[in-house]
Amino acid sequence: MRSVGTSLHAVVMRGVWLCQRREISSWLARWFPKDPAKPVVAQKTPIRLELVAGKTYRWCVCGRSKNQPFCDGSHFFQRTGLSPLKFKAEETRTVALCTCKATRRPPYCDGTHKSEQVQKAEVGSPL
Image 1 (spheres, rainbow, N blue to C red):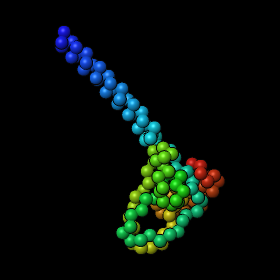
Image 2 (cartoon, rainbow, N blue to C red; image 1 turned 60 degrees about the horizontal axis):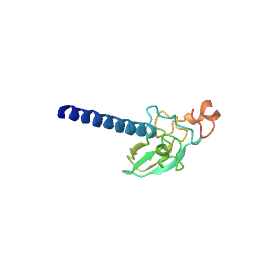
Image 3 (cartoon, helix red, strand yellow; image 1 turned 90 degrees about the vertical axis):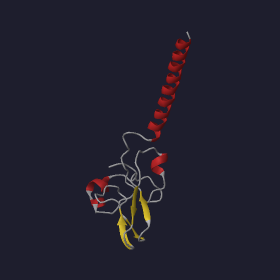
Image 4 (tube, rainbow, N blue to C red; image 1 turned 90 degrees about the horizontal axis):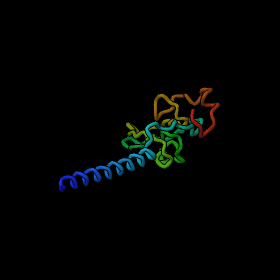
């Protein structure tokens, strides 16, 4: 009898563990979706600024930051599944950082904002 009770206890505990695991995974899925959202057009022109040699920056990938072109954490609170691009400036210089989020050379502007697709897009909408 005792072994039956013990195994019943083990089954109940395993069920509790699975239930807790399911709750945790559903919570994680809400905050970290498997399919990330598409970046949105923050602006249709790049932002020129001076990067300081050796300094680390976090470029906004999602386009939702109010601190463009840098990340303010909006990607997390809006549950986009996207993360900022962390990079270190090699030298102190003035650069153009992309805000349309369509560049092929992130975080730097490559002129993609001049394309018809970006120019026709609404600011705040995905391409």
